[in-house]
Structures are given as C-alpha cells and as structure tokens.
Image (cartoon, rainbow, N blue to C red; front, side, top):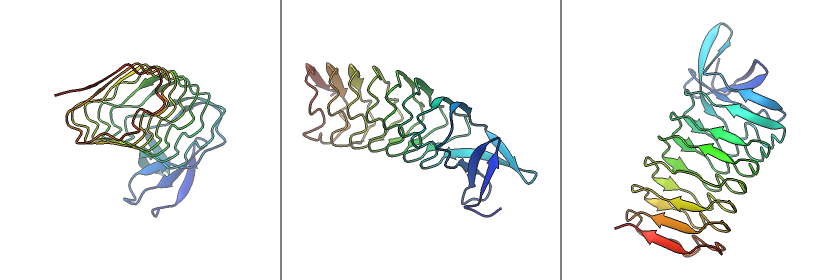
Amino acid sequence: MAAGETFVYNDLNYVVNEDDATVSVGENGGCIGDIEIPALVEYNSKPYPVSAIGDNAFYLGRNLTSIEIPYSITSIGNYALYGCSRLTTLTIPNSVTYIGNNAFDGCSGLTSLQMSNKVITIGDYAFTDCANLSSIEIPNSVISIGEYAFYRCKKLVSIKIPEGVKSLGSGAFTYCLGMTSAELPGSIGSVANNLFDGCSALETVKIAN
C-alpha cells in the first residue's frame, strides 16, 4: 500500500503513514462505547504497527465511553479526541511523546488522567475544558506546554511544572477557577502575563531556584 491509503480493520479506519510501514488511526467520529486500539493491524496479509492516533481520529465522539491506547502509539494528533465528553478516565501510555493541539479539548467528563512519562510536547489547547479534571502530574520529560493547554480546567487544584520545561505558552492555566497553588521551574526564561488569568482562588505561585 502507498502512503495515505486507508483501510478498515475491526471496524476502525486506518491510514498508511509516509514510511509505508506503519499506520495511524484514521477518522472514526461515529464510534460509540468502549474502543480498544490494537498495537498491530493487518491488511492484505501484511502486518502494520499502529504508531499514531491521527488528527480528528475520534472528533466529537460524544458516545465514546472509554479508549485503550496501546504502547505502540507515539503520537496523538490534533483534535484526536476533541469533544469526547463521556470519557471519564484515560491512560496515555509511556510510549507517547507528542500530544497535539486540542487533542483532548472538551473532554468534560474526564476525572482521571495518567500521563505518559515520556511525553515531550503538550500542544496548544490540548486539555482545554476538561472541566472535571482535578489533578494532573506533568512528567519530567516535558519540554514544551502550549498556549491555553489547560484553559478552563475548573477543578484543577494545583500544578507543578517540572524542571526542564523551556516553553510555557500564554494562558496555559487561564480560568482554572479551583487552582490554589502553582510551582514553576527556574528553567523557564520568562512567564506570560496571562498565564493564570481568571484563577480567582490562586494564593501562591512559587518559582524554583
């Protein structure tokens, strides 16, 4: 198969990647219930490792209640699970290094998130409007957190940004109404003025030496 070609395996759409050896989960907006993404799929008797959840893969999957992501996945694309409002728990496996823009935007039912300890980039608006997410541990591997990445995560109580983060986007924690404390690393050269705009309960912001 050539790069960009699509096929269906066990009722999910896949797209062949540019390397012609791996595939991404394609657009599957109509999925309902519980989804388990396999680590390996087969087409025309050839096995293909599943290396990414592509852009818009489960866009507006409002009837998606759970998703199991295999350790073969290294990248979660833009808008991949945008608006999947019935998801309540999520484990991002330690194979994932990239979380795209708006990847989990609008996952308003999400209460529990286990983040990959290898993730390097968290994109713009990645977790915007995850309104019921009360805690998140950002791993030491992260270098970049995008603009408005946790915008309107209203139940988030505290946040600690690890040493090693070089880029922290503007408005990353804007309107996190329940946030009372934040700790920033000394590795950040400058902090945007609107980083904590609207965080009305915020009492302390500590910047590490």
